[in-house]
Length: 344
Ligand code: CP3
Image 1 (cartoon, rainbow, N blue to C red):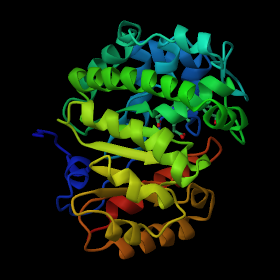
Image 2 (cartoon, rainbow, N blue to C red):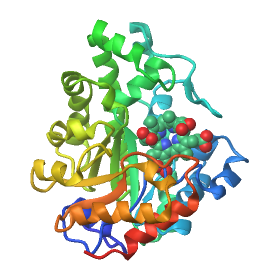
Image 3 (tube, helix red, strand yellow):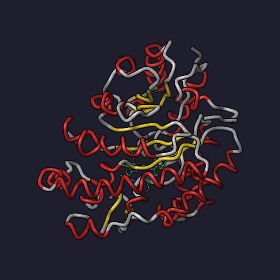
């Protein structure tokens, strides 16, 4: 894993090496809390933005240029793999993602394609444009959705509060669920390898909704497939494993051998780290709602976390989940300044 980046803090922390301060990036840093995002979004649909490499690069660069973060994350969405497999995906303002052809029967599952990497070529193209723009300054993080989280969108036909249809499928037709999960896992391996070949410096697997699962179901329907993916991808760049629920599932997540586990805000990050095998770094875990608060509070809560993590190699500062669209831009910028001024 050699790198010639000007700022390789994120890579060093991901590999559990010493850093002078924690690196910082934030999930959903390229998004709606930025007025500059809306200037672009008002001209194009979300999927047009994802699928046009120059526009995806423009949006990826917004937080790089305006916030000075330590890593860029590819502007895309976890659901593009599901679309390439045959999901009829749209994003509707105020509603979120929608699949007009949800996957619920054996025939639906049969129709899901696994030979669809060519449909995702625009992502490799975007990565190349972004790396030209970054020009060796900071790492670029690629990503994919984890099979369970992707399955939930395909089955529900969109976002869900309670994952009722997803759980009905897991409970009543586990074999069918496994067929879907294996198909998604195979596409995800190809997709992440494509991103690594195209030049990303790290990858994150997003299993956002794993927290909906019981301990046993997490192992059977989520972990097993994440482990498969991590064992099959080209491990030349650090791999970050994220889920909401990692406060509980971290010991299982570690068995998939990620370089980093990204932790939600329920757990004490140091306790999580201490319980993990040596060499697995942690990322997190500020409650994103702190970023609505007064600046003094934002600073205190960040420094409190840093004091707790002092002396630990392998710590990347991030939120426990993504930035909400109505968090004030100034507060995000301030939080990043606080991190960048800190020294161990
Ligand atoms: O983090 C980044 O800045 C990089 C880009 C990124 C997006 N989505 C952009 C996006 C990443 C990494 C994602 C991942 C993603 N997408 C996840 C996993 C992370 C998480 O938040 O848990 C999930 C579950 C999705 C699915 C998805 N995409 C949803 C539920 C929505 C609607 C969100 C909402 O709050 O309405 C999206 C749309 C989406 N993805 C937007 C952005 C910037 C908003 C699109 C718009 O402008 O309307």
